[in-house]
Image (cartoon, rainbow over all chains, first blue to last red; front, side, top):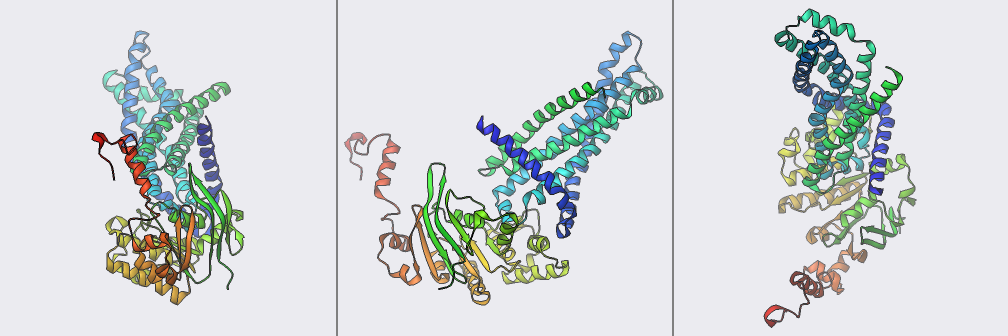
Length: 256
Length: 277
């Protein structure tokens, strides 16, 4: 119990330190250039490089949703409503969540392994010995990149899923693409889009913060790196689902 | 006698159930080269971490120019760390950066010097350690000795007046060892740098040290000049310096208990009635 409290306490301290360090990291004189450079590198690594896999996964999810729902709706003669359900499920839930799970496997694990290896190689200690704050230098760029790229990835994922649903509807359900698009756009409100993106931003922070935290917690060489990398994936997915539940409950309560 | 630059006053530290330091006292004076000796696992490298403020002590205090290390705020601690160059055991170069970027990093972070000047400094320090032709290589492309020399060049980039070396010659060939030894000697003679050196290498220790301190069982068993360490009859110092097998460092009674543990019984209860020696 004490270990669990310490673990969560340490995590929230890191999160707090990160939030405190963001503004100075992006605006201070000499640190500015390096923070931006690190930010670009991380945005490319955890965001841009995830685009193909997120697109593929979300395309399949859209197509699967359409094919699962359509037969039931066909019984009531409302096949075109399939597009409504695919759109709502994607923008409000599947887009942010599935993109986040993909980013966890792709970016989160890589961050934990990279920082863990730096711990083992005394690189973090060397950084501190040079009076360079590892939170500002390593954690901030990754967390900011996670936030920005998760939002971008979710937009890409949403569009890919809608396209997957459209292709499945057109090829297998004989639903015209114009009719599909008309239904999808008709049901979606700006709030659906924005709640999805708000979730995505929080997911991005969560994924990268957990990965950095567990990376910095690595002890005991290569075995420790492996252990904390797998912990990162498991803990992050559980945290994503729990936070998603909280978000959905709040949105449900507020009627958003 | 000058005022000590660093003072360890009765520090104690417990790691798990093991007392790594027990009421440890030491003064380090400006401009001197102090070599810390001790068996593997005796806490020599950890002592450097204590001096850098990376490891918190349980009791006692570390004074830097009379100011307690644990009372320092972030700004003071950073200022202390910036004034010290640290050579880590493995070099601790950043693997994702080239040697050029590794050397430039601390200067780029802490000074307003332009990139061209920083690059020039990196080339000068890499030339000093014989690595200038490898300036654009990643640490993964360098040998262990080269990484260590690269780490030393990076430690020098901020032109520190205090240097901590953690096993600077361990695992190096004799020529690289001599090269590093020469560098440390030059830094002392030309810059008047204060150096704290952790090593097992007695030849380097005698060559470089003004004073030596032998860490044993959580305390400094002996602190003295090179002459003292060469001539003393203290059995602990003699065993360590001469590399003898028998003595306080390796107590024969430890071997007995080891045998007993290995056999799962007392040493005189050996199978077939054979007596152990």
